[in-house]
Length: 423
Picture 1 (cartoon, rainbow, N blue to C red):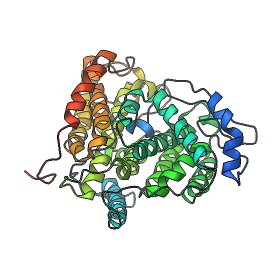
Picture 2: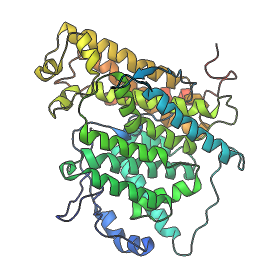
Picture 3: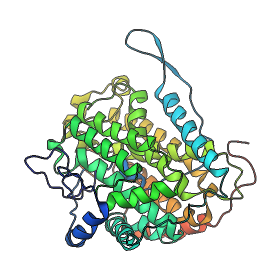
């Protein structure tokens, strides 16, 4: 990961949010709590650290929605007992279909996925506004490029994206933040219970309140959020991936899920011929691309933590092993291996890129900007002669500045008159 938030762990606490909230006290009256604690939010500071980006990699300098008909590979794999089992890609695709069906069902009663009208209890509007403002402050501090793009969205969509960004960041920090050593599976169970509460209108704190309001007004389903927590559980117990099928599932959990969360918020252009399923599939493709890029960028950093996020069977086929990674030497074998891994990541970017124009016009620019910027990390790995052991690939500020007007020009292109995936 490349950023972290300071959390506080008390001797009696098993869960601490990435923004410093202890979970030992249950708040019955969120409004009373938020009013009482608002000064704490204003005074809180969050510091950077240098660790691996994971779930919130759909935000910040990254992109998080495309809309192309994803070429689903319905592969069948064998499990340990020799029985045929469905592949991770097909399992994830089943989730995609369910999420798309939810949006289509709710779209029947509203035009163009417009949000529900605000129904605000007396005295709560100011608290909600402050909650959203706090989410915006976090986004502005840690995702500057993306934050600027969100300012072009409608106020409702902008605030909702901020709320989702913050929840994803807090979730990721549970297992990869400064207090990760204190986090247990039971702690993640409690975090999931807290998620259930906020979806049922019972937020624990100010930042939960912003997301609780968001999911009450947009057709956002809870399953991708739960899947992301499963990804955090995976990180607690798994540090090797036998093949790409296993790695794909991990990438879905920690990054692809954000695309599914974001589809109802970003919106689809009324002139788009894309199906709802294709929008979700493209969002998923971009999430996988982003996470694969993170993994390739952070090989050395992860190795120093005893982790290898690369398919073990592909390493073996290339004549490599974990020992070669821990030795941190660039060899011809490593260059050949990395070229194939980069090619795969670019394929997922290609699948997502075609569909960005299917988004609502106000949502395209931040997505294009972050997609173009993050894809360039792969170019920087190549420029470093595939030394992702001791050199961190990053996009320079001048290149970022150049990318912004290019992204804006691309955002002006209307949806194609042809359906996605047609020739």
